[in-house]
Amino acid sequence: MTLDLSAVDLRTEIVRTERLVLRPFRPKDVDAVFRASQDAETQRWIGLLPVPYTREDARTFVEDIAMKERSDRTGLSVVVEADGELVGTGGIYLRGGRLGPEIGYTIAPWARRKGYAAEAAHALAQWGLGLGAPRVHLFVDVRNTASQATAVRAGFTAEGTVRACLDYRDGSRGDAVLFGRLAGD
Image (cartoon, rainbow, N blue to C red; front, side, top):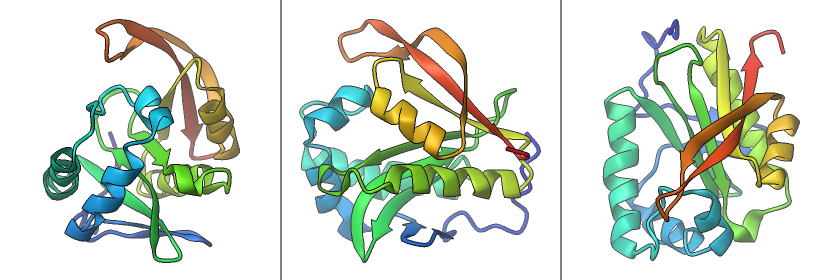
């Protein structure tokens, strides 16, 4: 991967859009992350999310996992904030390989249908591409038509179906649509 992070402090990096601030997690975000993660739709589409999702799960994610990704320089996990309120979470995960950085996002139930997911995904893609990534990508469950529409609104192109690449909570596997975005898109 050709991402140039030499001038970037991932521990403090903030990405801004017209309406959103994509910022590092803070300990005070635990309650909002816990509340957002109680949502059945969120739990349905994020197979790695523990169910039931406890306050300790939220604390571990906010204070340990998300912060460690930044300090280890493996990802830019973010709070998606609008008007000073957590409206979702997301990130760009800086794994190597042919596909380059991977984008992820989720929007809290109280903030849906306002375009925040597409705006955040677009901004994270621009951030990665702006630092030299030749491409960024994301995966969306083939059944999650709302998230597929979000990816298109964020400037991504559907590139095909990747079979059996998603781990479901029950131990089965599912298909995903691979979306990609290039610097020239």
